[in-house]
Amino acid sequence: MNVLDCPDITAINTFVESLKQHNPHVSAAAVEALIESAPATVQPLIDAFYDSTDQGIQVYMVQVLARIGNPEALDLLAEVVGTEVANHCQGNVRRIAARGLGRIGSTSSNPEIIHRASEKLIWALLTPEDWGLRYAAAVSLQEIATPKANIALQQALKQEHDKVVQSRIARAVNS
Image 1 (cartoon, rainbow, N blue to C red):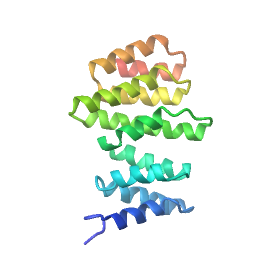
Image 2 (cartoon, rainbow, N blue to C red; image 1 turned 30 degrees about the horizontal axis):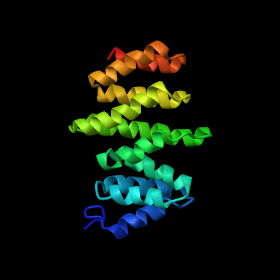
Image 3 (tube, rainbow, N blue to C red; image 1 turned 90 degrees about the vertical axis):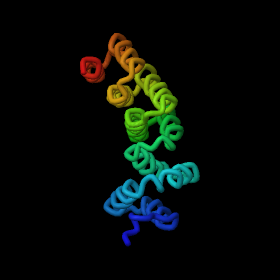
């Protein structure tokens, strides 16, 4: 039996520990294994994120949770999107989290989950100075495609000054 067929907490913890490796191939393999082992990996990853003080490891965890798109990770991803960061590299994790919120909101049938994901994405579209975060929020809101998301995209189109983001928002509005 493949460990991925029935992941236990020991296997999941081993994959999480592998994220600490300096070898990018090992970390990439751990990311894929954690994604393939979902949904069993979601809660252990959330717990590990809050237990970790290593931002590099936390980035991998956010990446895995965003790609899985499980609603259990909604609060963590929303928190990451709303975190003010001082440098571009940390900004990337916010964009990844925004895409994860889009995945969660576009695949859920639960109106509360869709609402919560949309609210954070609308904030990310209309508020931050980070043009990349606004861009990611526009893509995610286009995926969610609720009337509220569409209204927010139309509002953002009127106030957006960055030409790249403005073009992406226009594409979302016209889809």
